[in-house]
Image 1 (spheres, rainbow, N blue to C red):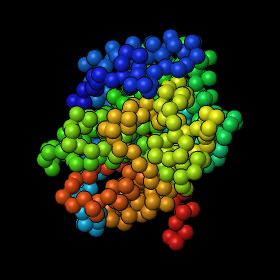
Image 2: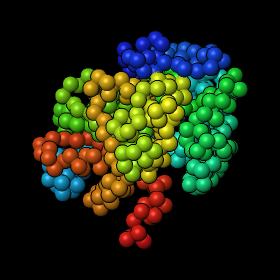
Image 3: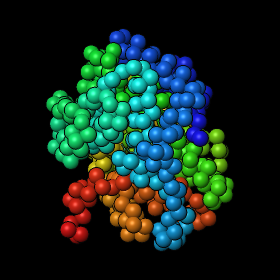
Image 4: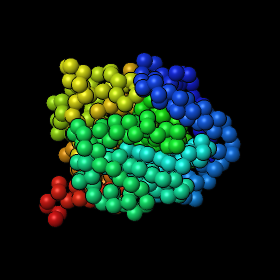
Length: 403
Ligand SMILES: *Cc1c(COP(=O)(O)O)cnc(C)c1O
């Protein structure tokens, strides 16, 4: 059984060192305290843990396999590459992990409605899915521009019974959808839970989402030990808001020999506006966005910068506060992978293993592929956070030689 961890951080104020916290309008303090109280009670409650485990097994499809990429490893001629197959979960990505956990809390709080934000639509689909499963009403906020780019996911959410509301402010993308969802929650928190989609936002969301996602690393560590013996040498995961990466990394943090690499979206290049690399690109500095203090891409005046990535799930100006802390501690190394390299990794994994990854996950795959030839004898574990079905249209646009 995956027992949700009781780690020492964040502190009682939700801080990871100087990051995290709760930077919200006064009116949201009480509802956040309610979630905090209900969550910390649930975390200690074996009945809650058992119900979540049952859903993970029977509904989401856990445990996910740990897969050894023999052909790819042989082709690269260095490190052995393993994948944690979160792409095989129901709805196609790791997001179902924190949606199921939060849905159980909504039930515990006696609420009947959820709202969520979404960029590419993946978190919206996972939210609409658990809303259908639990009989909640569901509204998803999505930038108008993203709705246009992700028509199929908009339809999928509607098919699942959710209302999708177009956000027409700002750049009409994810950042604006989060802002709108928070505004909406402020008006309706008595009946409504904000089902936040990553390890982001005000306390307790970062710790709660990380805990629900840490089932990934708990499983992977046990599977690796049983099947291969010992521990992997290096972990790789892509970092958007930071939930799938923390989910893999967290249960390994106490294993000093295990190195960890978080891969951000390098987009088209280093200039501000061309990437979403909060740690490794130009313009990332500590700041507050959407209720938490972390690294934020900003201009010299502190205005939130525009971002670009070919993968919508990594295209966000801030990053979960625990990552900022792990970066400052030097425990996790952060790097960026550009659009073109992620697309190349999609092709490589498809050709050598018959697995088409999500564009987000392909960033982590690309970094493992880049390092493998010079790491013979090492074992790399990559979190395959999602499958590529949702990205087929983007692959087609970018791979004209196959069309
Ligand atoms: C949303 C998404 C991500 C990015 O979110 P994190 O919170 O950083 O994990 C990564 N991979 C996939 C497949 C996604 O859908």
